[in-house]
Length: 284
Length: 283
Image 1 (cartoon, rainbow over the protein chains, first blue to last red):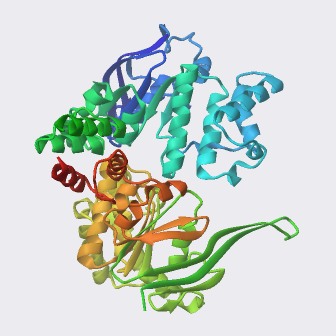
Image 2: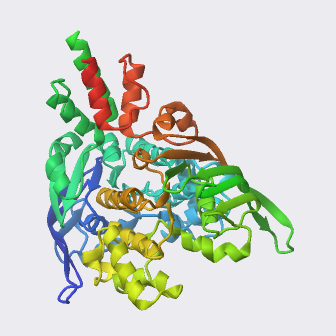
């Protein structure tokens, strides 16, 4: 199982004065069970890219294949695709609309044509898996805190039991603890359910900590595609396109410059810590 | 007298049912004391729902105190006659740039505030130019705001506030919706206004890295001020901050972890430079 993008191009407002070539010849293979991060500055094409993954926008040219099938075929079931590839938009809590959290989470499965009972069962499981305490389930979504609303909105997508979960900056506007909670939750879903996860983020520290593969978008093209360590080794090039490496990566390079043999490929706090401690213990 | 002085400031969100009976009371500000000197850069941290934004909305009287006293620029916030004077001396910038821009040309947007308070046209033109220049956006004066990046839009919003010539700017999570570049642009613009123009800045944020240059930091929890001090003093208390659902900058956390592992690194490291120096001295 995989998603393949073959030379995908997308042009907004084609043949007008406002024409923008948002994606340029993007070719990617997303394998089953991967945890992928996508970074890129505002306008680099990240959001346009992820909207292609469940057929919300149709590529201007090129092909997208879900499990080998062309999603642009006339007889392809795109409605089903949208429940298999669950998309969590930025500020998803703005889309909560039902009178209670539980009813809101039931909306997806009900729309898939499931019976009321089945829908409620899925909502139950989804709300459990995002660890939203039960006393909140029958309250209005507006009574929840920012982090809780965010989790309720993610539950709404999980209730459709997607195979692929795509999240567009799921931690924007949350406090540090709230950020950790959401990302730990996503990592757990990835690990326990072997769900494919695609995370769009502005935080280099977060992607370094969580993802196995990192894709850098720049001006509509894939600029880098590799492990966080491989990608962040290009920190100078990343800066030129308005991005950066995690703080610890810079630290490691500066330490090396001062004669301390630190690991220049460290991208997480834990890696940096181990490498510095090792450098000190080898010296003694 | 300080520029801002709050004493035992209280604010409650009271919910009533259809018959006007009180259903629930949420104490968003619980006897808050706040002192900000003119020209100071003060940061306010706190988790979602800790009362930061409610506090911010008091500082230019978008909300009136429910209890206690608040003086801004020597004026009592409870006196309705002071409302407009306080709003002119203390401007606000909010999180979402798209909700704050109203005109279709950048310079018209910046001119909106001074126009509203009857500033003469020649003076408006001067102010627009000066404030756009102060945030590094002068070359975009004739552009359409909807073609700007998030960071650029936020800087236009700040210029709009600057055109009112306030003594103080309150920024409520101005970078939450921006990419790293946009965050840096906005923060640099704010720091420059504070440093070069002496504007008093109150910055509310969830990004710990943004407050390392502040003069003082307030930490809020459950509507109360629970910590205050210099960034160094605040970020030395890693465990206490975590108990308030907050964090420290990644470099500070690394220094803290290395200290716990036995390296003799001083407490309260804030920047990469400091950590590099500390490690080199030990090596």
